[in-house]
Length: 403
Image (cartoon, rainbow, N blue to C red; front, side):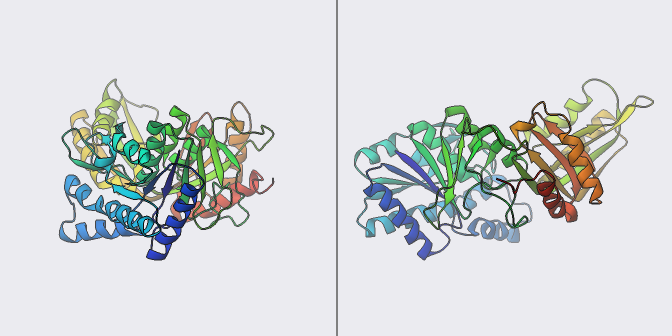
């Protein structure tokens, strides 16, 4: 059994839907059972969001989910129709019909469970199940969406629930590269990458895979094959162990431009203040990334953290309310920031990596505003107009164009 996911670019036109359907038909002909997960065509989701904001600048989250979920429920029946026209039995399913159960966080719901009874029944009947990705339902049958890239999450979660042999993520790139090839012409495609490395890269801006999809793949041991939908070449396997350990310490560079920062000035330096500020953000489903607290003076300190710029308005409202309750002096915010990260398990316990990164950026005249680290990642916040230059500098510094 194979779960195949096709992104928006792969199904962006009728001609591309026919090409995707031929690939599915070829896989079925080879003797495999196939579950196909599809995204909305092209930029359908963006158009629907723009339409929503044209009638209401701040559309209610529930209604927005009801609207944007239609993108995938348009693609799925089109693919099923195309397959049937090729003589391949196929049935399209919404998230509800596929048994995808989620939390109630609209626009960023998390999958709680999958009950794939309907899919298994279709497979037993020799049919292809074409599932609308990106969507699910709550216990109360409210439609939810999983956030950008959520079709990846749908596909890997289905592969886990169905115990599929592999989950193939078909996209408009050839696999996972050492950096964005649109920025670094010498970026190299990786044949294999570990789940933890891919998770870090996805979390800090590599848009090829959704972080939660990688997380589910690691948790349930689902091999994920990221490959191009435009040719039959081998892509990149995301697995628990890569075949060769003799490799670069740094495996990839990632950048994220949808970043803003919020500073809470004059916070009382006492227990419970940070919790009062961050708990409302967590309840609203707003992710906080880089956090820096200054050294306290005269019982006061400043707390700065980053959020997605698309979440800035909502985050500011919550933080300003929390700042009043803790007696902070004021709240300041700024956009125009980007994350620049290096990732690699080879960095673990290896001295000098951070120094090389910071020196390379300094020599290139790129100022670092904030720094965040994990065991296998170093992230710097820099000015957005300098991030592409930073990617190229670091790719050269760590010699990632070398095999």
